[in-house]
Figure 1 (tube, rainbow, N blue to C red):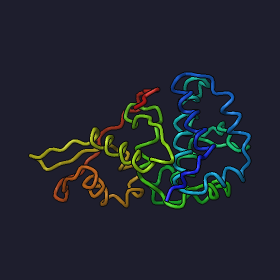
Figure 2: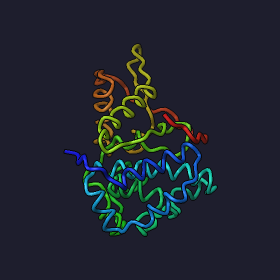
Figure 3: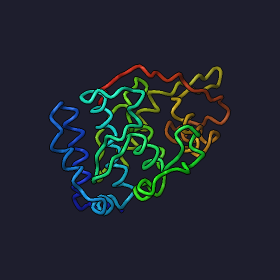
Figure 4: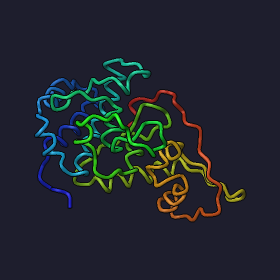
Length: 231
């Protein structure tokens, strides 16, 4: 059961994302995030629900900030450790592949853990990977899912909504040729979805269709820049 007690850190992550969306100054909010202690971060983000809510909002806010106001180039934007939280420095990759994907290797289709992950990331990582995060994180590309605001109280409902909305818009079904084509995100991180041969099961559950006899393919991913893409 999700704790209904107000969570200052989670609320702060939502406020930061809202300031980014409204193009307001984020300096004070960034300072507050940096001033928390690691112990306080762990205490307030003790559940997977709190971790997902907080870090998804932080990721989406900071990608926009690094791209827009801080002018970090795409080649280094995922690796630069310029996100100051609880007196520690994080990168976008730390958040996505370390914390939210429970330290999976970035380019292993989700099958391999990162043997070089830091003890800090291990401590902060979710206990169980939730593949719906792939439909919540926005990396500024045209094919990325749009940015939404996540709350601790309605996280499950919100993640289901963005997953269903994204897959519905990104999936094409050819009844005559019995083929189904969907986002390449599911291919790149297939192990997160239970393995390549489980992808059709995910699509079946979301789209309420049986695709057992359909051939699966994946659409080309557009890396053209599209910032400020909010729901």
